[in-house]
Image (cartoon, rainbow, N blue to C red):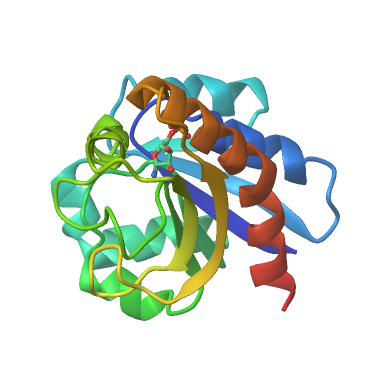
Length: 188
Ligand code: GRF
């Protein structure tokens, strides 16, 4: 059994979608959801499916022996970042080399890096009059949003789309593709 830990900070719609996708799977299981926010809605979503959860502070995330012990306790083989807003420490990137993936709601390398998260991304896409946007699923490396790209999907942006509209169409792509790409990464 390959065990996944999903790291979240907020709403958790991707987290729930991934949990659902793998529920009943004999080879891959979501074994833990980790949040840096005690009030993240993602934790409630995980609770609905009886997936164990842990809340960690920024200091705990930086504490290698503590985090590695937590991940070992649940036999974690893969880490999925699904809306996790803290920087990932070096030791975790090293330990989970090619076993940690992130989803970014734009077509990297465009609209990535510092300050590019959530609504800021879709506002920037609108302001630049982009004709298309999309999602990028990538391995996590030392460069923020710069790890090797695994998969991208595109969607058209029409001139009348608001940032909210853009967010909605990007969200549809996330729901459609993220779980099956995670599965491919694990099974390759
Ligand atoms: C998603 O747009 C994801 O691409 C980004 O953070 C957002 C998380 O949304 N990294 P949710 O918490 O899964 O609803």
